[in-house]
Length: 627
Image (tube, rainbow, N blue to C red; front, side):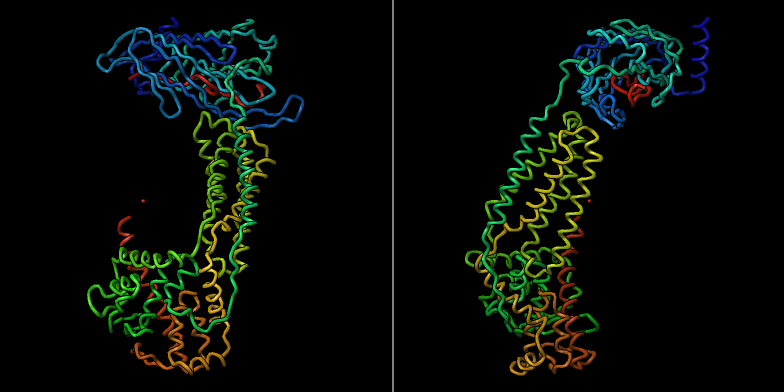
């Protein structure tokens, strides 16, 4: 009568197109499990399947990864809940009498039984064997039993189910009072299937009938520490080895960085730029980088030298005309820039320069090549090798600090990427901006340092509160020490980029020249302008690369400056009023022209149990269906 009732329910379910669309059910499902001392579980699943439709066979999915909230405090201490993540292994898979394939997919082992060349119908019995190897629970005060003998994703009903879990090592005498069997849908912590187990000194078994699809049975118990013996563990040896290397490298680097000699930059007040160098070269010297603005400054520089004329056709729209060619011995970057400007005609509007990214890059490349040999700007200290090794050793320290990384690459990604945010990017930033510090305000440098320190502190608390929840060999004090040492080494890393004597000498003169542009007295400017009526315009390209073009124009608001021969405008020229306008127009139009010319091409080319248990949780279990 019970069987007739079960088949009637199954028929109704099938007619209503329930989730059992696979056209089969389990008439009998038996799980025999043997738990070894090392918490490896040999499992045999005997499944008698009734196919109501022609299918190729069945499949089982066995999850390797699971997480559970556990009490990590010692007995007698205040309870401390913590989410623990585990990644276990499934090995020695075999199926009796049927072809099969086993493969990993999305953190689970999929066992596909049957052949694509044949179909089955009616009753078939499958016997599946596998070993489920649990990882170390990483809780020093107790061991656990948390195993699903029936998973929550079995998408067909089971007429009769039984399990027999045998233990190589006798169970503690208190197991009957400590055992909890969760049953029901995935995630529930109740006993909806009302499993009544038989418990002996070495086994737990039970049977039940008429289990709907997607119902799980999970055994959970707290066991005394040491119940499992020889469980594969991940030791802290490598973590502390790389920790020691990291600390040693950080300390050595700090000493090297603090004791590295740098040539002294002596600022001298200058009224003119150094003889024989252009504004583009000055711009490269001050920040050790050939930038767009350096190339853009050549437009007013060419004009001041008489190579081109500039006409303002309308507000902030400039037209340039070639007046004469550059001399044969002109540097390649100047020839390349002139070729870029006049690649089609001898007169061109700057706002029409487009699709010249390759030519702009070529000009910057030639500009950078000027500073080689005796004119080389910086040299790199061999300590940069130690800095690279420090980065590697710190990554490996965090790689081996989280036991779950042995099983789960996600934890490695989280561990190392979170660490990389303050350290790697901070070091890269320091190395890049080091050459610009002489023209950067102290307030900006200190503010940037504070921001990065705040970021390090923030990441430290993310590490302690989030990553370490998954198990960590390193205490928060050790992590704080590591973060602190690496932060200091990173902040000092710019000292491993050393100015050459040539750059130090040039920087002293350029810093003095820059200071004069910012703070020059009116009397001095009037005298210089009187001696050289073109003085304002000769200095303007250099003010542009210093970022002081507006300031330079403001310095001359009460000084008479004649309109240059190479500049014409349709709006009239009224000295003080238009001097600021001319300066702004030259600066913005020139820099915009180079930016648009470069990036128009580039853009187009680019994208009770002690906490933590529920039905379907723990190891084993999983799901199954037909195919």
